[in-house]
Image (cartoon, rainbow, N blue to C red; front, side, top):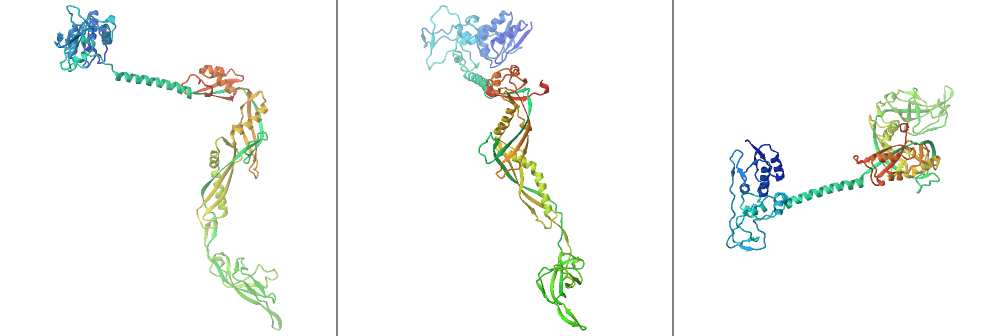
Length: 579
């Protein structure tokens, strides 16, 4: 007959072991018990295991090297083998020592040779009905239950077989095995604490989840309703000097939003300039016109035959002509004076030779008789360079403003205070300074322009702006209707030039939609706590509502929040697909 091996785990309980044993088809079973296993340290467990084997018609052998388990098996009558291939033997049970002579016997105390059913249940995990027959040695006659008390200096007596049933030793073969067998089993408080900790953590997680769902869950319900369209054309004003909005007059209290920024831009100069030297020389001025003296101020122009201009460098007085007789006739001898002159422009082309120069500043009838006789002019050189012109600066400034406009207006919108809205059409872009480096008329091939740009616009409170527009729209729809879409997102604003006080008038045009009245608060209250489908069906029962879209947070929710304050209801105009 072939033996079957049954391997038990360290923490295997007696119920699991019996179940495995009875399911084996072989008639002979060797139960392999691992070291430190606590199941077979109890005589109750061994008795239960033996009885289960007998009921199943199986021959049972324990395979273990544990001395305590071997001893207990001998008391129960189970064969033990040190290994699977070894021969099984029936261990001889140890007989407990008789009581010492100096032991004190007291009446009315439990007899350790007897085991109550409750102790069997506690040690083996079975009910009193399943408990096996007592293990203690039979006595010839009944006697009162006793408890043996030894003196402290005495050596402890060996534990009885009955004591082994009440308390199982944990460590086989230890010096304290006998005392442990006679002691009550100590509860594992560490394991109990860990279990309580895990239970508490699970309760906290579940409770926290439901609390978070109650406090933070939300829903957005969008109702698509049929609406009619009206064209809106209205005028209103925004006044930064007004402290409070005057809705009746259509004037909103405004606020001027402004900020400045420095912008730098490079540009290429295009001007041309001759930076050479000017020619100079001596001019003899003659008066053949009359006998009167003619004063000429410094800077008087002298024009060469080819049109080039020279200017005097000092004030002079041209003497009058002197009458003389020449060849028997009366004649005038011209009065003359000398002055230094310099060319109007640079260039070697002004190095004129001796020539007669007219004086354009004199009356036409004198220019032929009062004139300058120029000597050889010299020292003029030419050197043409590129310089910055005012036109270059103006062009660079315009380009810098255009390039920065979009970013500047975006930044301006970002500076609008919370709760306010900037009015399009009121934005202004201005420059307070534009400095070129190098400056105008200076030589350069590249230049930089530093521009200080200011941005301003009018802003009004968003709620007052929307209320003003919706009041106008509501008036057009009538008291029995409700505005669904005020059209402000697509509204066009045309601004008039601002007044000196900063007040500005605006023309607003848009298209608004409205329809049957829908109370958002009442709808949120009606659908709170409902399942997704039920809430959607309930929402579509309202007049004019074609469909409803519901968005839940968190996304795995299947039911709307239980509080109406956590539900947001929006109304949009249904399009053709909703009909």
